[in-house]
Image (cartoon, rainbow, N blue to C red; front, side):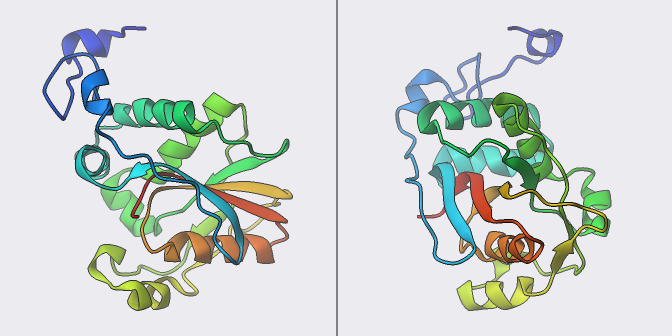
Length: 204
């Protein structure tokens, strides 16, 4: 359905410039899907749409740093169309939180926006179960070992939150998996039986 915003500021493909979508049908053919993974430990599985490269990497960067929020809708819709994941009945969606100061400075949390769209499409509740208590360094600057140390102890269960048996944890990108693993660990300690993961993209 075309909106007023689409008429005033028409979408154009970030790959070729064709109007209509951020990823046109032709450029879509060149995207590399990311296979579902089953990490050992506190995460049951992680579903990701695509490899974190090329056009997908460019769009996520524009969401994160240029506030191109409406691209989230298109990416989540595309990801669910190609994946058709199954999450148990009663699963509640949550997201990787930002440190409060960082979120105030940025004005949004992209993981939260992705979670809201995902919850809306799947009919699942979206609730904030976690909070970040340390202002950590950007994970992009660190190697795998440093990433694990960087996020260790940086999350906790949000005060007053009552966690269900099944939780779907959402973030924008899975790289080393350090952040989502740490969040899943906190959720499991809070009584969650199964933690599933969803990201738009994943480093292969």
